[in-house]
Amino acid sequence: LLDSALTNLAEVRPEAAKVVQLRFFSGLNLDEVAPVIGVSPRTARRLWVFARACLQREMERLADASS
Image (cartoon, rainbow, N blue to C red):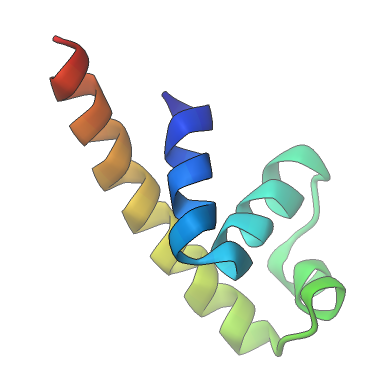
């Protein structure tokens, strides 16, 4: 489910998906993520909040669809 949700997020907002990838798969914190993707720490935090909400909603949708 997470892989599908992350793929869908990447189609809508690639920067937000990159934040998730860097946080989870590279272990970076938001202050470290910001320069990697070329945004301010504040923008990185905003993208993180957006990504979390989108992933949660998408995973719930996918779970309901598979039931």
